[in-house]
Length: 141
Image 1 (cartoon, rainbow, N blue to C red):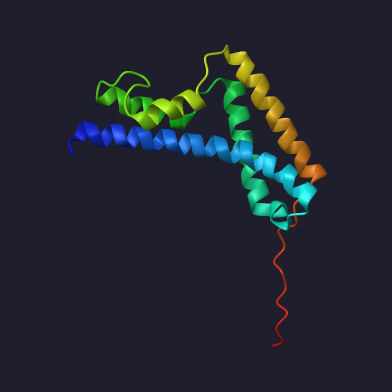
Image 2 (cartoon, helix red, strand yellow):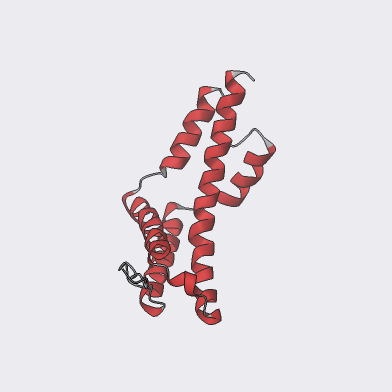
């Protein structure tokens, strides 16, 4: 495998991580609401909820200050190193890019991210996570 192939594979891996991040944020919120309706206790896990909240918080802050996602920056840098045109290449990258990237004015994304972030914040209060306290052992000393 030559270095260009390795670099393109790394770029595709970064793109896949980006899609998984987006899926975690979007599907995570859906699962929180479905879990509320179905009484799933795991959706109240404080670590899951905190990571989910921080994830969308980072996206909202980046969009408000006009920072491009580091995953996008890294992917594009890798592709440019081997002279790859933006979003051409492997089958995986082609389809993942079509799912992840849209051509709309930046303000549309800011509004969408802020709205989604507000719903995630509201879910924190409507569907409260458990506390971060350590559970006490039920074993006798």
